Length: 416
Image (cartoon, rainbow, N blue to C red):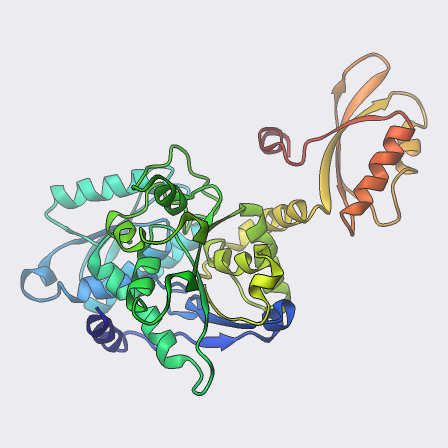
């Protein structure tokens, strides 16, 4: 495989330069380790997906392939890579994207493939969209460019590993851990296959969204499974079924090597990297980085770690939601339904119970629950999680009833 990957990497230079491998000073100091970031968010389409699409399509440019209609399905990043390649090769393509795809990714896909592609929005999740793309390609004698489950796609994604190998600082001890995100599994399959005779299996940590753990479930069950439900927040990795070819390459690993990362934890990483480093990450691009904060400190300290930053296609219209999720995850923002007496001065008495760092971010009168009491939805932000313990003690001491609905997803989605 190595020779084929190196050939793919050489061909890729006609399209773009290598993405940088950078030692991050902030993260290295934070975790007391040598943390290197492979910055796939700095590719021309701001994700690694360009690699697989290019490799797949370049192998089909000869003969009748150049006259065919190319088709793909994607939640965004593969679509952008596909569109970029359609324009590069001068071929026509049709892109199927879920209706839920962020507008920023739709617009960028259209820009990258301008004059050569058209976009069809189908279904709420990727797997429905992918089915529509397969049917369309079959009906129109088109060439389907799969997002992850294909040897040529895997080979293209493996060029990431080949670049890491040639970019690793000369004279430095080799890295001993590589952390990467998993959606359909093409990147993980490619990287692990490329390094198969150079790194032990224990040198890998895979990360998935908690709401779409397709690899972890497959490794646990010993076979590929289709998840009944997927959380689409991490749109670049929210896949209900890992690719068959990819699972074949990854099945030797333990389910314990797959970390399911809570969606709200990703938001903490996204806001930190934006505020501290000026790095824009999409949720899938924050998966591997977030794993560092969730690992035991002793498992990170002193190690040389490569983290694959897979993408930076973030729609800033989502930033308020990301900040909200981050604060809730850190425990510095909560939503309460408060039962307040309906008498003059009751609100003033409640406000007196707040601490000096507590701030009311939302206040909404819901309805009268009884003649003498009313229910109020209140959002409170504070500086430290422990401040809420003080507030709750004050509420109990003063006989005020409340319900904390912060982590109640059903109520939070309906009310908040």
